[in-house]
Image (tube, rainbow, N blue to C red; front, side, top):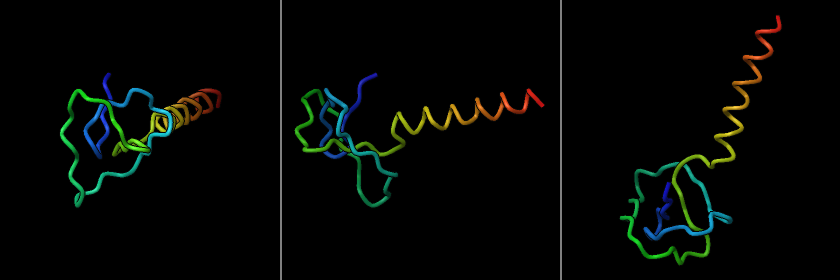
Length: 69
């Protein structure tokens, strides 16, 4: 999976320091291109991978606890 900065459209080589925000209808997303992202903090509209994993694990814990009852 290739990740592009939604601010400049550049490829994010190192996702550390990436800023994740909710999508905004006011600010357009940049068109992806093959150059590297040169922003201080790359911007991605959407949930962070860590938040997604935590949300998925919460569902697993709820299923496990329900199956023990």
